[in-house]
Image 1 (cartoon, rainbow over the protein chains, first blue to last red):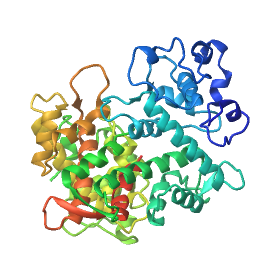
Image 2 (tube, rainbow over the protein chains, first blue to last red):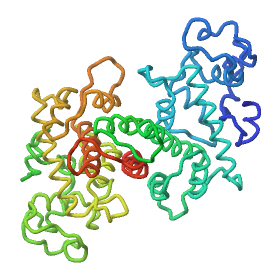
Image 3 (cartoon, rainbow over the protein chains, first blue to last red):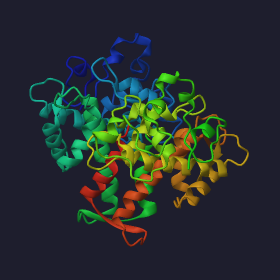
Image 4 (tube, chains in turn yellow, purple):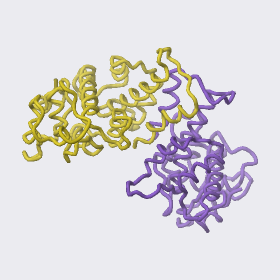
Amino acid sequence: MTSSSTATKSPYTPSAPPLTHLENDPPLAYPTTQYNYTSAQPPPRGQYYHQHEPMFHPGTDPEIIRSFGMVDRDQNGFIDDNELQQALTSSSQKFSLRTIRLLIFLFKNLNQPSLKIGPQEFTALWSCLAQWRAIFEQFDKDRSGKINTIELRDALHSLGYAIPQSVLQVLISRYDNGNGHRIELNYDEFIECGMVVKGLTDKFKEKDPHYTGSAMLHYDQFLSLIIPFIVCD
Amino acid sequence: MTSSSTATKSPYTPSAPPLTHLENDPPLAYPTTQYNYTSAQPPPRGQYYHQHEPMFHPGTDPEIIRSFGMVDRDQNGFIDDNELQQALTSSSQKFSLRTIRLLIFLFKNLNQPSLKIGPQEFTALWSCLAQWRAIFEQFDKDRSGKINTIELRDALHSLGYAIPQSVLQVLISRYDNGNGHRIELNYDEFIECGMVVKGLTDKFKEKDPHYTGSAMLHYDQFLSLIIPFIVCD
């Protein structure tokens, strides 16, 4: 499904999150050769295959397994915020630690007390980023690496999130540098905005199981739902 | 009600937010002497008294009017985030820009598009901080300059906010430096946490006018209500 070799040729990979900075590492930094991540077969030595749960589901895309091994630099079987930030940050995109933590918070196992993800959560996160990158490219018609507010609205809509324009304006106001130019978002900013929308929407839907568009929230639920988004920095 | 001269004598003023760093400014930096803020009479030259609305309400505590003049360094009649941060930050407390923006967001006039406050909103903010400082001192029984989680819960409760312990744990998790010590909050961290609670609670109450403890929220309302808290950084 994904290909890091394709990812390195263009700032826009069709589906894979970029791992460009890993290209420049010395060969020894590549766990690929150690663990044979390019094979769909279970690798012979990866400790999180043999000693730790959870493992990858059978049938997981080998490229995702390979990416996990590249991102999991300390090879402890979990991806933490620093590892994910290193993997997603390159010269052309700078994921803030806030965005990284939000990503991990949204995808981590609820039983996992700290901000880190294992193989199964990584698979979901990586697949989501791949889908969102494809959408970003689709709406970045002039391939400038940026999308404007209208394109952001349409991109989120195509991902299933119908956000009022007034809400979007508030959401993107943080990217207004005050120079009077129209606000445009890079890919990392698109992910930052999008994950806030996705996270809040997913949480809201849990309280609106019949998709009525409204939900009755108790004060405690309301605080419990929102505060994790606010402290993700 | 407040006294900045008292504020400078102790890290804990009974009611006034500290303005310690202003003490060391050269006399010319004090607009007090220019605008006669110590007098309850309208000052003779302050442009925001004569040219701009809104002005202070009649009967506003002269010390608050004086403080406004000290904080409003560029004397344009409004307090922006940088001015407020300078005023609240001292060697013993470092208000983050995030907290400062949250404070301004919570107190600014809804018709004011940018993050700044005029005299009337400043009066409300300053009075609130004075009240919260008094509460902080009350619960910092050993005058260590810190309060623990239980004291935070009790302090918020005394301010009218009954927060579940589980929510508080999430809220203060950002102050856990991972060294295994019990989390304790400085005054500025107390204000940061408290203003999130106050802001969310006030917004929730708007949707629960009969104080039932629950509110029906439409998805758009839900997003509109929360996203400003998330982008305040």
